Image 1: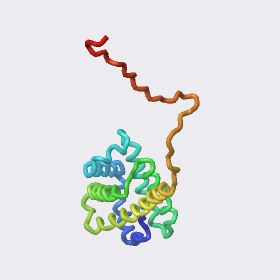
Image 2: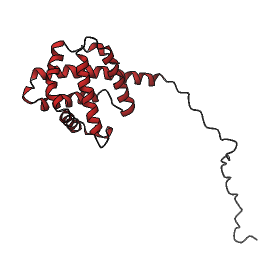
Image 3: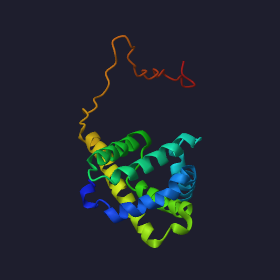
Image 4: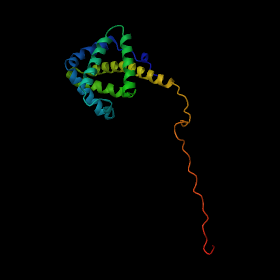
Length: 189
């Protein structure tokens, strides 16, 4: 199981750098979402089927959650945010089939999108800050998804037993072989 405590909460400087870059992102949230999903589906086209044909609502949700999480992570107490991220990860696992390995592609697509939307303000140092944030968020979401998997693994199903025909149903009966009639041999009467 993934342990989100092994991924350190981004430092104050990292969070501040990400928040500063969000000024450009927040001014163009739809653009961020468009670029993010374009990158995601380019890198992992098999994920396209997990989404509705009309991405308008999804794009708005994605940017709302992202910008809300970035605002929340700046607080000293992130316990509530961590719980929300775990629930979100569990929901993505059960409703959409999101796997742990998908978060690697999602993180890469997001950092590429931020780079494009932020423009010249984007740097290698800022990239590192976004990667740290994405890893922290993904660790909590994966932990939530794995908790769901663990719960499902713990369910013990009874061994299947052969079905017995119901009294109202006719029982199937093997047909008897056709009787063999003696064959008349020529010359016998």
